[in-house]
Length: 295
Image 1 (cartoon, rainbow, N blue to C red):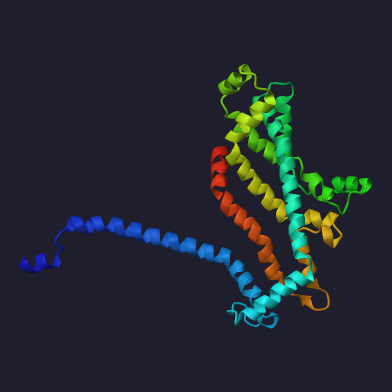
Image 2 (cartoon, one colour):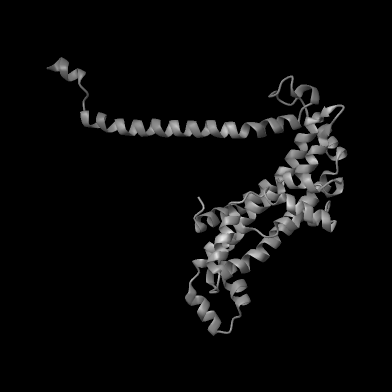
């Protein structure tokens, strides 16, 4: 009996209680390891971009993930990035384009969304159905007729060619309509009794309540149009109207190949504003997605 008692655990209940805790610990460890592995795969191109920006062109493919040997190569790549192309002009063009597009999209979407959410008029459901249909149409589908129209008007290779085709956003109308629809009708009726016009109701009551949703849409819009290469490559032919993604193409040299060091520096410079803007807007962005149900 003494020998058997020495073999058996002193407290079987405590041993059985430890098993679920250990399984939860190993499960959490496995989950975190999987997420870390996925994060490493996602971040690997950015790590290579940073390493390439700080290395000599001859070392980039000889040892792709080698560490930089000094700051002189980084300085040379930065100098070539700003000397090869007007990088600051590309950034200014991109800022003008995304700001104007966002302003026009909100200027059209806010009254349209309010009318669809709180108005009562004939054809309201049909109009909303057309907006939902427009969400299903890829942006590349109407590009040819838009290009021909801009060519007829002589508006190619201009800011207007970059901005006007995106001034009306069905996605913005749908997103804001869903948010405005949840605003209490009683407050709107009380505001009308107090003498508020419809424009005052929208700007003083509805829009402030939808700031997180507007911030979420602003992140979508600015990111999409800042990184857009397809449309600028079609309508822009001059260097002084090029946006940042289009400007990256000018680093390719037909005789000497691509200057990857300078190209990676330019990529970092163009990505940094969007990243910084998202870090400042991420709380409102997450709130906007939660309020509209887009998860």
